[in-house]
Length: 429
Ligand SMILES: [Zn+2]
Image: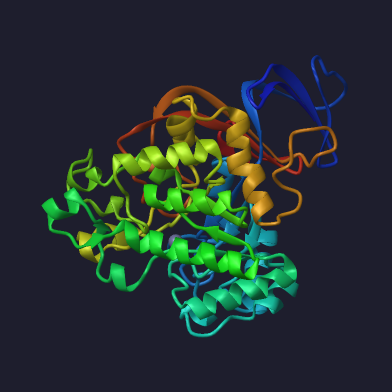
């Protein structure tokens, strides 16, 4: 197959020949007997890799399944996702991670790499079978109790020590539990005005500081999930300056949205569509997160795609579930927050949304530069134009997007997984 007229990382127009799941040739004016498609001058990026996706299967198939979640990922330009462990049952044994891995092989519209839980049942009391999950067919390398924090320092230390044996990484959801009891939104001016219990920045920052010190002490790899505050950025910058093995991610929504939306938004006040963990923060935090992603202090954009059925979101604020879907809007939000602001070019986007997450997750076959001989995992993206976000068009089973009523730039034109189109003209194949 030949894809005519694409711009690799936004560069000059070239053609790509795909053969046997690989990129076989790159150059101008490719011809031959192959099937030809017109890339229309789209930006070609290596297939996106998400380090942080909630696929909800097994257990909450009313919110999402491996099939619908990976369809949503493909529409967003992703060729691989890491499936978080807070399913039911929890992915804390070789049996459950292999079940998710098999579901991915059978129904996946992108590759599915299971994440293993750090503690049994995400309960924070006893380490899960990390080694058995690493040795399983799912070959788990990322371990996380995401949704909950591994708040016990001794357990966190043991987990960091344990994963060294197989080059694993502990991905921490940094939330000091006592400081966030009953917390509803960012602690600040807006929470004070609205009378909602505040979620202080220090609850995140204290855990990140502790974990950076622990990772350095045992010489292991720490990954910080969904960094949301300017103070967290400062701590991670300091840890990296020491040469410690610490990486971090930021979500698209924390790069664009602020806690002011809880008070005043296109969809009214107190709308639980904006309720998320960690909470939306202030404009100053958003600016610090953007700068940190631009200078590499934050390594990765990860979606924290968190589908919830309508009945769990369209309820009063205090009772609503926390989380937002994000796979199908991630690239457009990153364009809005980072590319159109001049903070990141397309090579930078390829690094933060493909190369770096694949490297941190030790995921083979993904995140490689678009070169001859590389796997033909690629995303074609048209950055021109703006369109209203239409949740009804999502492939996800859930519709809890904070961008309804907004317009976003760009669109994913096509996604290729090992040379096979999973999305063409923006539609699932
Ligand atoms: Zn989390």
